[in-house]
Image (cartoon, rainbow, N blue to C red; front, side, top):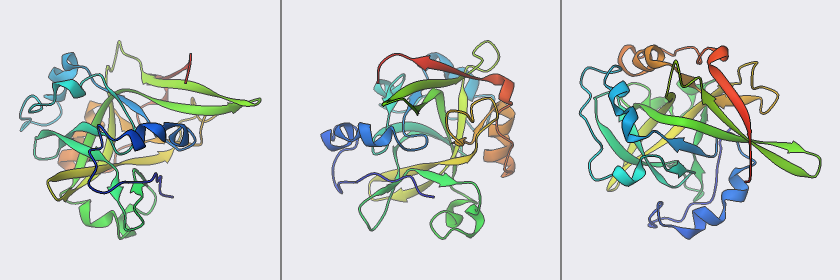
Length: 220
């Protein structure tokens, strides 16, 4: 159950043309693209963890960006750090494990070592899925009800690597309201669920299905 794409060791994920040229591959994979929160959403993060340490250092260009595996995005750690990290655990096969199934995390040798001290939240405005339709694929934007929860808190795990960190996003069975698009979804939670994941080290329930909206998007 790994979501994987090719990985070029030593390349800069945010500038690597190889990743961008492989976005057509990622469209067929669960949770292969999402949009990072805006700078205006930072205030809400302070409600999650008392030790929150403010703005991401030198990463303002990351706000509002649409990211895919291998690229860099901001994550919130259980220690209160808000910092850039590369999306995807690099594997010996030179692929990236960017999704981790929630089922069996405790026994998975790749992920279980990071369950105690490596929990993170990847804050997003929305994520994208593609559904086969006739001979093409339709793109859907899946987002929260912005009037109630402006941010999707995607639960994940991180680990240190040379010169920085990398992270993976946890997936679970999809909420009924969006399961017709894809049978799985990111473990997306509300602020209380994010606190449980980071601080209490509990595994929270997915965000209430009525707070998730799926809209057909134009283009790819």
